[in-house]
Length: 362
Image 1 (cartoon, rainbow, N blue to C red):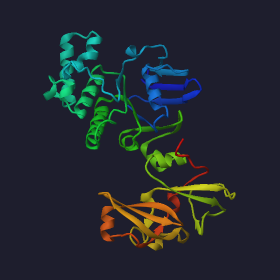
Image 2 (image 1 turned 90 degrees about the vertical axis):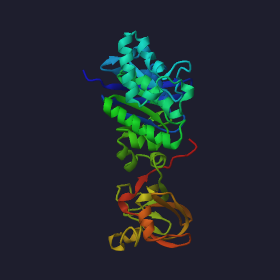
Image 3 (image 1 turned 135 degrees about the horizontal axis):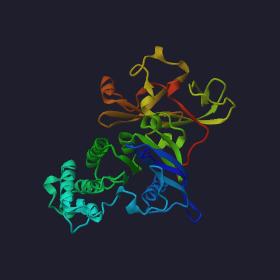
Image 4 (image 1 turned 120 degrees about the horizontal axis):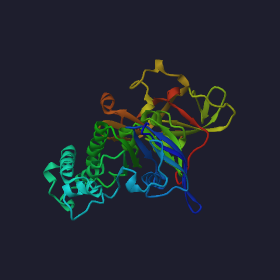
């Protein structure tokens, strides 16, 4: 029987608060799935339900066809790494990694062999006799990962494991975790509020908000085809334009934008979203001959920010700030400065249309 992890109608309430609302998901063996969402969206609660440390109000958790609802955490054979590494301060690196194996009463010679394998796998051989207080944050996190995979878990669950580390260490450990998951072929569930982490690591991303699954898809689908205005803003950055739908265009102030995405032409208020990197600069990143004339606008630049590989340009369009991102190499061809006049092009197929706009405070 396939080792799929299946969530069926999982709901969790705390009094009148619905923390997880009717979550359904089928996770294939060896799949890397990220639960992504803002603080308080229910992602950690759902992870705790999967591990067995929290019990759902209703619904079922199945693994390999077996119902886990009444199976205690220790019997689920899931490896878990929390945001706080929870290493034993009085144990060495090797002893910490061996802990789960000892609890399972594995013979000592097999424990020693497995610990050596994990030390090499995690690049911790030189630190095997060190104590947690003698390690950096990144090294401690690798020990926590090593301890979790030492027991050869069916599923590995990580709850914001990199949030306490600095940016460069986070980047390195992302690579370690992804390579580890691929090499071991292990099913991995990863909780994060960092959309860059999710996009760079996951096979599938589950966007959560207010306890609900709002979109499930590959990183490409989530980024390129966001289903709601919240996702368009939360994953990456989007510029939003408020307009009115017409028969063959969206009216925004004096502009009649052509849009490729289908919509109801009933004179309703709509919201257009476009990514900063999808806006073209006429004469620099696109030739006017390749543009739909109605989607060309004239603006004046307000701010130019050099970000290394990308240059971010802020302009005002009918009093509304818009962000354009261009590659640094393109910027080298034309050093755009504040107060420069530009012609921008909004490609019809780069727009996404939404009937409502999310509220940032929710």
